[in-house]
Length: 296
Image 1 (spheres, rainbow, N blue to C red):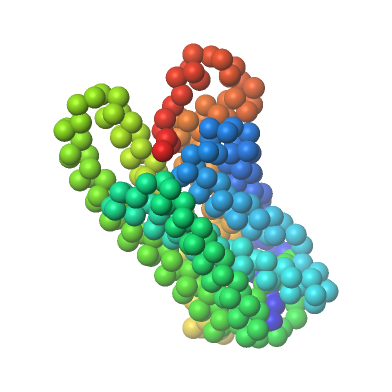
Image 2: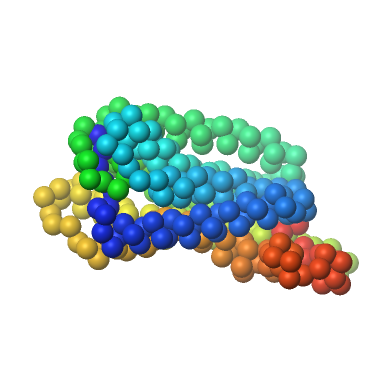
């Protein structure tokens, strides 16, 4: 039922290191959201806050060594499968929210009602998929494994397929979103007030920034999917060490990718990081003219 994801080798150490990096990235977004009310009160930033919580929990579970106890192995396998599946599902929810906001001009109140339903559906689907995985995966014992993970060709094939359906659907929605944003840019000439034009541009920036979420999923899951596909379709083939290393390098990093996009590459995020690190005084002129890069 359980197998080692990577043996205790260089690949495992690399996976642990990248999990720490992802955890730091996710916790950065979480701390900024908790520390600064203006940061967490924005609807779209709040979605990234939720996504970072799931990424942080998944990274944390990867840091816990496996155990010879079957009960703990079941728990760790359940947690890893569930927490790893939530970000792709929730990323699709974010893509749907962004699409109806841009394409159908839904306001924040409507979006809040929709996200509650989508949130519930994403958790229920991940929970159901995890329960099925636990029930139908093959039973195998690896006492020397670093951590426990499901082993079973059929169920892993289904699990990875669902993740890629969510990722591809998110990519398609964001292609449509970018198309609508381009149309909106063309109609902005009719806006007379310069302040309204700037506000609209700043608002559209965050929608474009959100489009990087499915790209981070592609970076996270591509190598892992190739490796799993080899195991599913060619179970007797030899392991490729380079593939293992690449999976260890890329798979745990979604929290780090999100931190780069939503904090490091965001002027607003960088200002709040300066405040958090006590490098920038709250009353400075730079902060009083608040960057509206993610305003509602």
